[in-house]
Length: 538
Image (cartoon, rainbow, N blue to C red):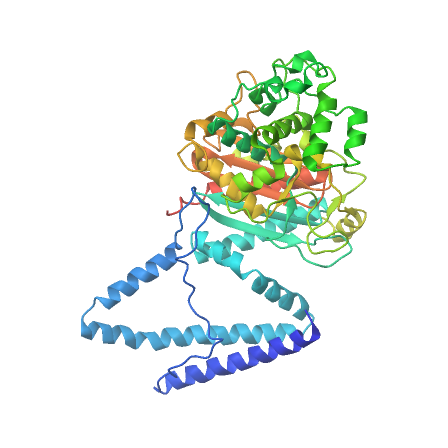
C-alpha cells in the first residue's frame, strides 16, 4: 500500500463513521433520512447473476438471504396496520447496524494507529482487491454465519499445521453438496518476502493434472475421435519399426491406468534432450515419446501398474494427433473454459523474478516426491477418529529456522511431460474440477454418467483408475477418489467422496515429505470437520 493510501483510508473511514453517526442521530430524532444516499453507502449485493460450475451446480442464494426474502414477502402481504407496526421496528434495527459499522470503523482506525495497523490494513486491501471472488464464495456458501465460523477454525488448523511442518503457505478449499463451503489460505508467497498468500493465488498442482488429461481423453472418446482400446500404432503408424513391438498394441485405457508398460523413469538421453525444450511443446512431446517407445517396456503391457509420467506424455501426444492442436490449447478449450477455470495455465505460476504469485520451495531435509507415492496419502485411509489430527504449534524459533532454509524456486519440469503434471491454477478452480467429478455419475458435468463411471473404475486387481486412485473408505460410505501431485517444489492433494458429495483440495508451495504430511493433516482435519456438518440446502 502506498503512503497516500495509508493516510487517505483512515480519513475516509472517519468521514464514513461521521455520516453513519449523523444518520443514526437523525433517525433517533425522527427526521427522515436524505432521499439520496452518498455513493459510498453499502448496498445489498444482487447475486442472481452468479453461477457456480457450468453443468454441475446451479446458482443458489445463501439460505439466510432466502429467508430474508421470504420474510420481506410476508411483511409485504400483511395488513396496513401490521405493516406500520413492522416498519416502526426498522429504525432500531438499522440503527444497531449503523452503530456496528461505526464500531468497526473505529476499531480499524485504532489498529492503524498502533503496531497492529499494517496487517489490519493489508488484510483490508487484500479483501477489497479480491471482491469478485468473495461474491462467488457468498453465493456458494451455506450461510454467512456458517462461513465466518468455518473460516476461523479452518485458519487455526492451517496455521497450527503450517508451523508444525515449517511450510511457507497452506491453502484449502472444501466442496460439499455442490457448493464451496470452506476455503482459507495463509502464509507467504516466498520465504524472505512478506507478501501474504491469498486464496486466489495460483498453485502448481503437479500430477493432479493426470485426472484432467484423462477427462480430456474421455471427451474425445465420446466424440468418436478415439476409443478406449485405440492402440498407439493406430495413431502413430510411422513409428512402426522404430517403436518396440510390445508398445504397438498398448491401448488408451492401459496408458491412463499406468498399465501400458511405460517406465517410471524416462530414458536418460531423452530426459536430457527434453530439458533443452527445443521446438513447440507438441514437438517436444513427439520427440520425447519417440525415444521412450523405442526402448523395451519396463513390464509386459497389461500385467503391472507402473506409475509413469512418460505414459501420460504418450496419451498427450495421441490427443494432439487426433485433435490437430496442442495439448495445452485442447485442454484449455475443452475443459478449462467450460468449467470457468480461468486461472488455469501451465508451468510455474507468476512472472519470473517477481512475487506476483507464490514461488515453489525445496528443503534439503525433505526430498520425497509426493507425485510418486505408491499408496494413497494417509488422510483418507485412516479411521474417522484418526484422520490427520491437528497438533499444537511447535517452538516458534524452530519453525523460523526450518523455514529459513527453504530454497525458493520458479522452475518446473519440461513441457514434454506436461500432460502428466504441468498445470497450475487456483485451488478454487481445482475445486470446480473436483465438483464435476463428484456429480458426474449422477448426470452432471461434461461427460455421460457411464463415462465418468469408467474414469473412476480401476481394472480388476488394481486400485488406479484413469487419473484417480480408487480406495474404499468407511467415512466416504464407499469409494473415495484421490490423487496428489508435486514437481518437487509444490504439493497438492485431492480427496473426493462421491457418495457423500464431499471433496477437499489442499496445497502448499513446498515440495517433499513435510509438504505431503502437512497437506494430509489439513485434508484429514477438513474431512473430519465437514463429516459432522448437516447437509446443505440446494
